[in-house]
Length: 340
Image 1 (cartoon, rainbow, N blue to C red):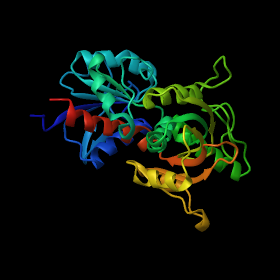
Image 2 (image 1 turned 180 degrees about the horizontal axis):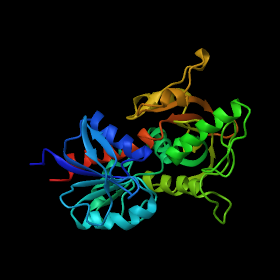
Image 3 (image 1 turned 30 degrees about the vertical axis):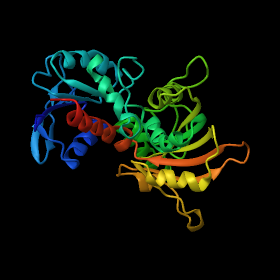
């Protein structure tokens, strides 16, 4: 019989995604026995809550995981690479939100609506990787179409909120807007240029091929999650939005999918919400996606430049479904189907 309660460690508890993971555990009534909040020495001693009970944040060390069943990591790739093995050695299963383990052949990269079966491979290293936020919402939207007829090529352009960079970026946008509206210059520290009233066609550093690391994440992660050699090209852009990533997606499929059929498939797909009544001016927007977990899909239309092409506009809350909620969903399947 499965355990009724599970001991959880939240690594990176004070960050934007970490605090959202805590909230998701509460909202979804995850069966938590004991919960431990872990962060850097700078945050140790802070007080957070869980279901109204105050809990002190502890400093993350290699000895932090005794008695822990599941460790949720959202503290960056460097800490994940260093501390996930210690958590696994102590008996915990790690669900990691960083890019550290995503392309490791022995680590499943999971979006529950798309490839929940891959969770079974967690036993190889004791780690399950949470994909990139922009990849998550794209594959949730494309999965029902790919199941109907194979997607052969994806061209995606993203418009990503500053919350994807963390709390400091949220604060930077807020301060810059206030400064500029009051006639004062805007200083930038988080991003290489001013983000307020601007768009930055760079997310992460550039690779030798001219793509950014963020763009290559979308290329490689999509193929791994979808378990198909799909041709993918991406352009990722940071925009002055607080919460909610938007994506313009163009797909080419093996066989034709009519607009009507695409709408039918997406409306019935788990995790998706069809928001497509353009005659009434209704389509997905970040302000509507923020604060909820569904991936909103709209502006579905035929690509008239190719035989089997469709265009879609896809929006989701990058902190929730793009990170925290996806991780908690993985944990739910893990305790339901695998942990005893």
